[in-house]
Image (cartoon, helix red, strand yellow):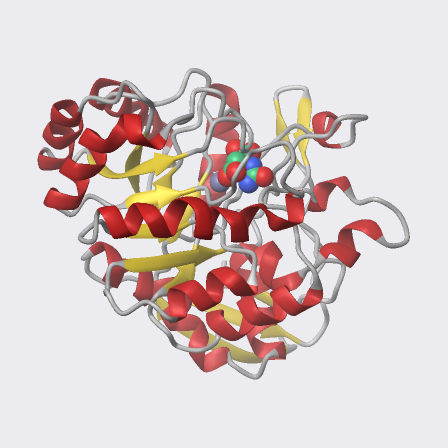
Length: 352
Ligand code: NCD
Ligand code: ZN
């Protein structure tokens, strides 16, 4: 133990309920950073081409398992990418086999690798009906994509125009609103009485608002989708995450892209936070005087929503007197991936 340690916090091994691992060389480079600290992760299916069938999910899960460093206790929870040709029987068979945990809805064009997403929701009625009947959660990228809707309004419009009507048509459907970014989303989840609605929140949306991205220079490493919103929304997210309301849980949305494609005239969306997500969260919860609430948010509530046991393994966070250096970029072949840096002192780290 280093001499300047001021405090420790031991919690059940956390889970990440929204994660992009990519594939191939990138996957092998980023996976250890998650597998070290998280017991399980919901793995997003937006590969190119996407993970569309149970067979795709099986092959992807096999590739992930092969890349888990030895000694790491990590379970990938696989998702299917909902398309207008998703076969309800294939999905159900994968779910029954324990291979598929959930289905991801990307409105076509909403974000990175979403071109194969759903254009007309009524075309997936048969799949949704089966999911509602079988309790298979639908994970939503909750943004409308119409060109005329301002990007800062796209999440709120999705709730009113798409999500709420869908949930009224399928009242037993279980839904996780992924990476919520607005007070409207927080209010929608908080007001729900069904017990079938949850939401993930990312590290960056708790720590940052759009001023951090746009004032005193444009910070491309803060650009993600849904885009950072104004401070009022950040405050609402922070209140939700620190409220001990079990419907809100951690999904880092850690989404690696090579640095040169982020620092680009047309930079891509995604923040890579896997290496320091827990350290940043501990700092955020400490600053909100809510360290005692961190455990529920990162280690308990997501497992509860998915009907999985809370981990029996333990993870210890330790607070150091002196702030820690932000992590170096990681190398992926001859490329680098920049790690999330909230540009504020972080005193916490996961005990090595
Ligand atoms: C994600 C990615 O890069 O795959 N990017 C992001 O900004 N969050 C896609 C997503 O989750 O929307
Ligand atoms: Zn994502």
